[in-house]
Amino acid sequence: MTATEHKKVLLIINPCAGKNSKRIGALDIMNKLSSADFDFEVRTTRCQGDATTIVKEVGADYDMIICCGGDGTLNETINGLMKLDKRIPIGYVPSGSTNDLAVTLGIPTEVGKAADLILSGKKNGYDVGSFNGKYFNYVASFGAGVELSYSTPQLMKNLLGHAAYMINGFVIKLIPMLVNLKPIHMKIEYDDCVIEDDFYFGALSNSTSVAGLFKYDNQNIKLNDGCFELLLVRGLKRKTEVFSMLSKIIHQDYDGDRIMLIKTKHVKITADRETPWTLDGEFGGNHKDIDLSVVHKAFDIYSDNDTLFVNEDNE
Image 1 (cartoon, helix red, strand yellow):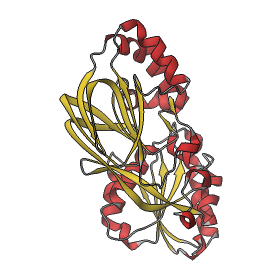
Image 2 (cartoon, rainbow, N blue to C red; image 1 turned 90 degrees about the vertical axis):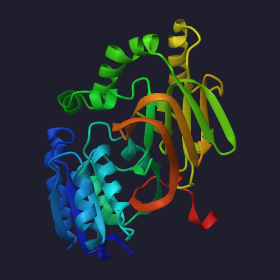
Image 3 (spheres, rainbow, N blue to C red; image 1 turned 180 degrees about the vertical axis):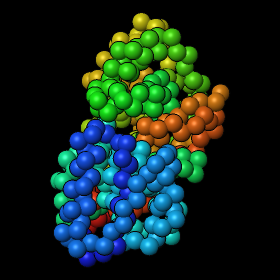
Image 4 (cartoon, one colour; image 1 turned 120 degrees about the vertical axis):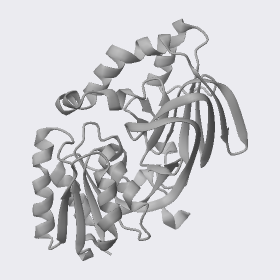
């Protein structure tokens, strides 16, 4: 089925995401949909959680849902979608500040080109994560620096994009935080393995990068293989090790000891205290017991990065 055969489209727009030039570009989406003879309805989000509510209430009436916003808006859209009995393809028009997931999926950050990709009809099945019953698109994380994404001022995000996180994170907060932060003692269970230790940071992700800082080898990442990558950073033995650890991160030196990278389908984490988490860059609450799992091919998403998807003919 080609994209032009989809007639009823729900277009969700977050008017506060990204820079002003990208917000204005949302008009391009409506013009392109009109030229393709789509019957679409536009809904604008006004507060956090709106996209989830919209999709839950009316999403089942449509053949396609297009989300225009940042990773957080897409997260809300997918959380609404997962409550429906109907599997509906998602089109993502990234207009946020960092758009980590869009880069991974090969979705252009220029609004018109992203709309053209949707109209091409090219899509792939995509795995999402479940976090204590709530869903995340590409990353759930805890530990040092996780609050940097949701504590970075929106004005700074809009003006500087990804550089805002780097300035707010590394220069202002992250290095002092690593030096002074007390690691979190956790019991981590995955597959048939159990690890109990102190950790500074952890992330379960389905992406080639996390927050633009942790980079993974693209050849080892598949976005629809039913597995996510679990990254764990153990506590430092001495504070002076902070710079060597940052060097390992920058050079993707995940040595299996201080920095572990594990492919898994299910993780259970028990922490010694309530710990803040982020889901796709937004605050996910404080938790002591966490159950994380992968929902294999939860939905189809319009994307153009075939190298990151398992070829269904070879499965």
